[in-house]
Amino acid sequence: MNAATLSGELVVSGLRKWYHRRDQAPVHVLEDCSFRIEPGKLTVVMGTSGCGKSTLAYILSGYIKPDEGQVQMDGQPVQGPGPDRIMVFQETALWPWMTVTENIVFGPLARKSVSRKEVTQKALELLRKFGLSEFKDKYPGQLSGGMKRRAELAQALINSPKVMVLDEPFRGLDVMTRELMQEYYIKLFEETRLTTVFITSELEEAIFLADRILIMGNAPSRIVSSLEVDLPRPRTFDVLASERYLEIKKEALEVLFSESMQQAD
Image (cartoon, rainbow, N blue to C red):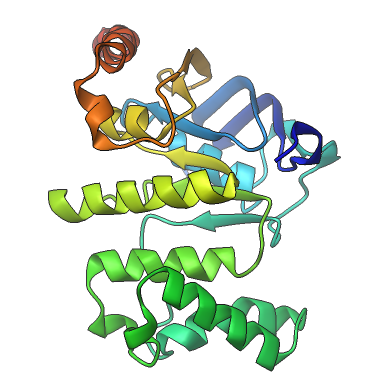
């Protein structure tokens, strides 16, 4: 894909965010948080527990507004959620009373953006791609954790977004299923080159997936480090044994350890 045709650039400028609670002091989450998400790249955001990663994901997706600062996508200010920026949440977003197919087609049908015939055909194609054709008439309660995650990715992709924001999407899965989902998503990304912001607290996951890792500091948080992950693509788990992988891991651990020690102080 030609660089000039890529869309989904996010520019974040001077974000500040407080949470105000009744009879309690305001909680200062983000402070002067600024960075750029390159279009067509997989950017991982990580940091210590409670640093504001999920808050940042919600701001990028338009679900909450910053108290100060701005997010722009392709030069236009983000005013709220929209189908051009789809978020995959930590917890399942599948409606339990709808079949897998009904869940996937719900968004486009609710917006009346395409005909039922067209969106159903696209949903069936996605289900085939995600290995879920046999489960198209099943309900979420009949799916495994990994199947639910795949269905949610299909639910997001049917909207043809410019940006995917994934907030620790594989948290809670067993180790084997988590690794399978990492491999599954990286293949999907390498096929589509869809601009992706991936939130995680797992360093190995971050390095395996990312083109670039943004590390957040302690709350009130900002981006304190940006690490380029120049491991070759297509990428397989073999890279985890490479010398370059270990160098990137060492550099990231030094930053994370420094932030953890400041938090302890």
